Length: 103
Image 1 (cartoon, helix red, strand yellow):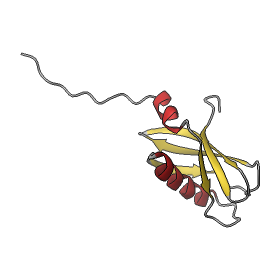
Image 2 (cartoon, helix red, strand yellow):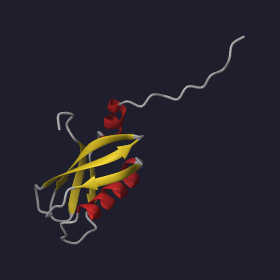
Image 3 (spheres, one colour):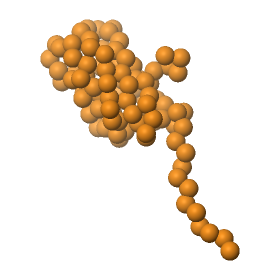
Image 4 (tube, one colour):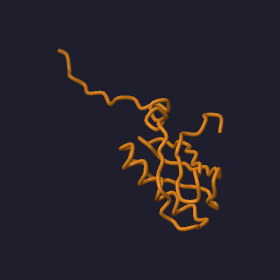
């Protein structure tokens, strides 16, 4: 007798990175702060609104926004921790990309 067993699809790191592979450009909602928690909230909103990705437990380094500044963040996506790289286009806008696997 055969049983119908539902298997949950495996989520690999490659699938998570491909989910985030397209860069996100978003406005920074925190004035000119250096607060990684505020940036984490903005990154969470940007991922959800622009990519439909629900990220939890997002953490970012403290920073000073200026053109070319890069801030490393981490987030849990589909149950796995993944690195994100936030690059400031100017003092108020940033782009989010997945970190290189070597970071």
